[in-house]
Length: 218
Image 1 (cartoon, rainbow, N blue to C red):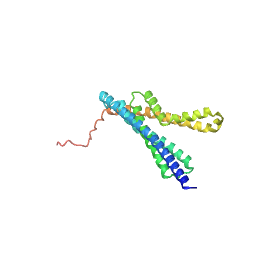
Image 2: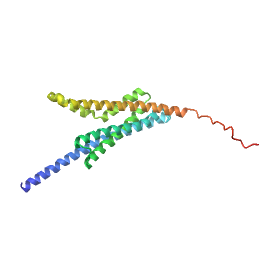
Image 3: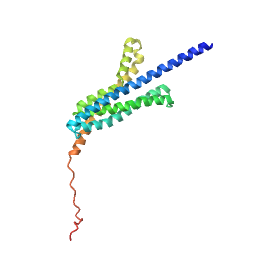
Image 4: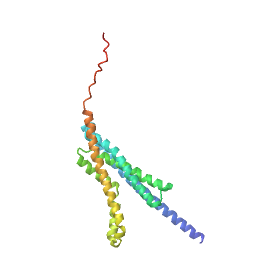
């Protein structure tokens, strides 16, 4: 192969790698920017609500409890999804440096979005609304758009339906798990908010006097 051909292939592969790097950066930056925008709006609305209603309310306590529950749920779900993805890519439990970075880039935004989702869901006044909001927020974490693209491919190529049917079931199961996790997070957040509020209004127990104690008088 001549030198000009080597230079061409070198330029081609360099440009191809640059293109894939740019796609990955965009795929990571856009969700982070959107999550940051949603977080800023939510925190502003929550601050306005607390300024009017006060911080000792079910919504205030539920929002903070939901943030903790959502962080744990988002971390577990994203971590489990990334682990399955890595095992399918590598075929073993060994991970290279690139795959580890890929996993962190997926787990950290997932945990952050789960924390934000739990905070938004917990900032409700009743369990039903909190469960619906949490389920909807966690469904976005499951990337339903990718599943819709996969479904559209099956519709365009029905001859591959039986081969891709297990993958379709996997997508549906994943969405059900994320919906359930979001709903449970929202409901538990409101319940914890009510319990925290009830504890604040619970009377302090009276101190029992020690019959053996003396008051210092003879």
